[in-house]
Length: 234
Length: 234
Ligand SMILES: Nc1ncnc2c1ncn2[C@@H]1O[C@H](COP(=O)(O)OP(=O)(O)O)[C@@H](O)[C@H]1O
Ligand SMILES: [Mg+2]
Image 1 (cartoon, chains in turn cyan, orange):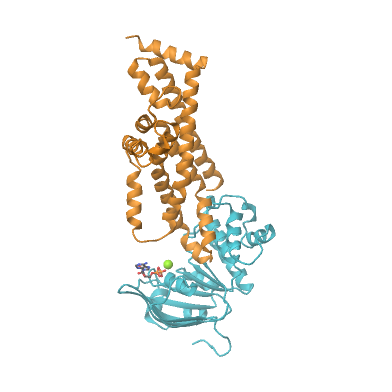
Image 2 (image 1 turned 120 degrees about the vertical axis):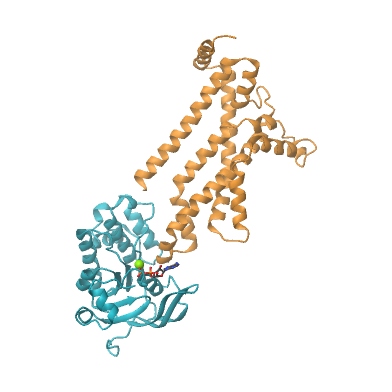
């Protein structure tokens, strides 16, 4: 159990369930998410990570249960396969800025691109970027919203180690700047490197929510033990 | 019967000498088809965008009908416009039958569904692709529509060129509503039909070559637009 008396949660989930028709995708998830180090969302494929992130973002509405935010919580989301507008790299950032009250000057755009190491690709058509570069551009676009909470869905899946490292560095520096990160991954090494705390999902249920070292040294549920041992959970 | 070779030679002679009748026919053809394309674009593109971006009862039926109308037989369009504009028809008092205006109307009716249906498809496909990002970036309705139209612009230009090509090559409708009157409503396609039947093959052939050249140019334009878009917008 986390100590919730000292840190007020940014988001609280109370018995949140999400169904599609009669299929239960998430069941009875209760969570408090507090500011601080990144929260990593672990679980096998199909365990409900993406669904939980979309619920947190408000892109989906719970079938039952409640999600409450602190007031005026600015949230941003990076999809696992982000879609670039058919425009230049800079124009993609400008588009994200245009929906905010921030100024969309070249200086703002350049500083966002610098944060993700893409300033040299300023005028390149966004869809011509590599997978890793597109993922970084998507993060820059999300950061354009000046979020307090940044939700990322497996941003390093299908990237090589160099591209993965670049993304992890960006995430770490955003976290150091005070952005709360909630990130799904199925990569245990990545979770070890980044996480302050771990949420473990299995079959649409919350397995554990615990500080990162605890999860890796003393997983409390059999599902988590199997997952850490690399066994399949069905 | 003369050798076809001689007809070709005379046809080329006509082209080189810049025959005045020929010039007038080409000019009228371009004027009629350009006007029809502009009119069809003015109606078809907003209609396509509207169907793509709104949800209403009977929408699927509208899409099926629009798609079906793409294959309208030109002679039937000609017949319907003829009936409408003929002296006893609903618009008979306008006295437009056998004028270039009637020909513009017929060609416009022929290609409006093509432009509307293809625009709808292009805009809707892009919307499906962009929608999740729009939601995550909190993009408002006005801005969504602007972005979709803007980012579809190259495809929309290609659609216009396709409409122009179809209208330019069409003979049945303009023959019926224009009447192929010498010096007044005679265009390339109707002249080719007439001159061929009269045995004036050099004139028919030279018009045929010009028509093919125009279609080639239009297709080359469409191709260049796609190339340019591919390189600059992705
Ligand atoms: N729109 C949908 N329709 C049907 N099933 C879905 C839909 N979205 C997700 N699911 C199912 O819900 C489960 C959880 O999906 P997801 O949240 O994407 O898991 P994860 O991101 O952990 O792989 C999966 O079994 C998936 O097939
Ligand atoms: Mg997922």
